[in-house]
Length: 176
Image 1: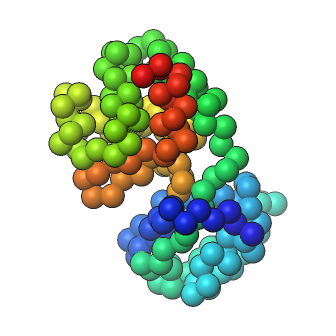
Image 2: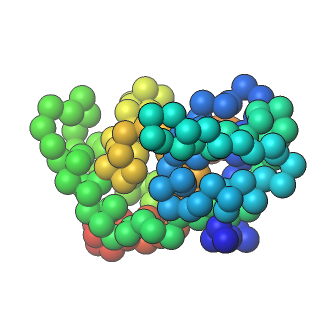
Image 3: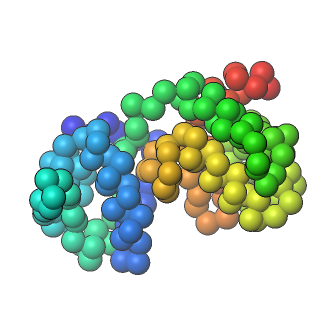
């Protein structure tokens, strides 16, 4: 059974967002069986396809539209290691923005837990900088690609919210 956390509700897919949904499925298929993933979407039509010795799960996009899934909380993430990996990644050379700026951005987001884009712009020079920093942290925590459902942060409209476990570990690491 997929782990469920009542506090976590994530939009899984809309008609126009099939690529990011498939990316999320790839992330979770490494941790859960296809049957477990499909069971979270009772109204969807699930099919499996084998190609080049790899099996993939596809949910019929129209059936998944506007469906929400409870849970999808990835309990396999070591949030302490994720915070350490993030700081190490931010300190690597040749970054467009300084370590001080990027770490300060993550500090503010983790301390406040949820901020609007306007509030983040008080510590960041532009929306491009916000995207760049979020991308660096995402790469350090989850690897290349989009943030998986239940990942280190989520965005709803113009509001950014950080995963509580990541925030706690970041605050401990940075001694904030």
